Image (cartoon, rainbow, N blue to C red; front, side, top):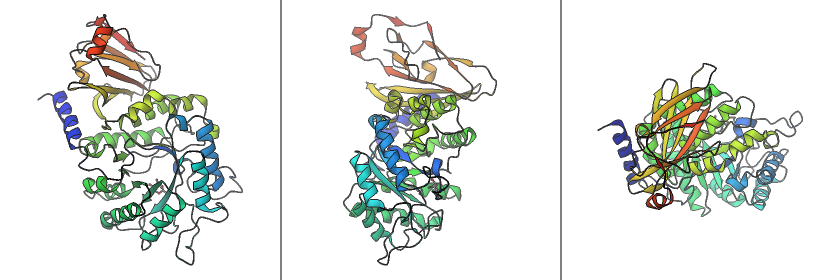
Length: 435
Ligand code: GLA
């Protein structure tokens, strides 16, 4: 069996498998999209020095406003999620969690109501152990009351972290809190940091159990504000893809962590690379940026509807790195439409070379695993150039010109019988250049 037959077989097996692992709350049937405070705002609690950047009611209200007014909500970003450092150091006398009274003067329910008034959804952070990673009260010993509190407040998404607990106890703690969330009767997306801590300790993670109990889960350490951190996460996902990818599917997703796009460290090329790879990985698309200062070129990356569609493809198949060649990494994700047994594909060509010049990579469709004898119509998802008048056959060669640390992201749509009657012109031997 060739490598491509093998990878096609793997993809088919994933689809047959799909549903076996699903958490049955009917949520997150495509990767959740939204905004999460942590990467950009961390535990900033000094509102005197950072009035518009501290973890406060104001930050989340402004974010909700901008998600709508800047067009992010319209393309699918819907969750506004608080991370760590929102709590008072103590529970109420009745034993309930309470938000920091200075920074959230109207409490969480009022904030959730505000977010809902914008037709967005509201998420919150807690920790399965005794304390959050930053030392605020955790849920341990209060699981049921906390799940009920979240439901009363109108929470739609919970990120549950894994500090201050023995990793072996996570296999009980995470499912138990999920059951309490379900018992509230409120639809709440459940994001678990469980595998990340167990992987970190070198434990064998029971991903089947994770996927049965969580809608998404972090597999690996925190993404940081640098391209090397970003590509470090990506390389781990590639190294583990033959095991991890099978657990992704509608309702249950691997999570490589937040989008860094629109912040300080990544260049334009690098931001394009992250967006393409997060689409290929069927990753949750959680921005973590200061929306009021995101420059237009970064906003257009975040709002690229074609790329979002790849990420949100209904099949929910996690893509894989299929080549590392001459410093070009090629990633492929099967997507709709499907014709007979042939998938369409999203294909990301990522330039890992450190020489300053752009690089041209040449390959046939067949060698990318694109074997539909009727052929493909290919679109460049950033430039929107396409081969619309031409059908490329498996034997067709394409040339792909990528900039250092950049990406060319293509969608190869399988040609159907319908297309066949529409297009007279087919290409067998010509070479297309995508850049
Ligand atoms: C951990 C998580 C991060 C963030 C912080 C908050 O490090 O992995 O995503 O939630 O805790 O303290």
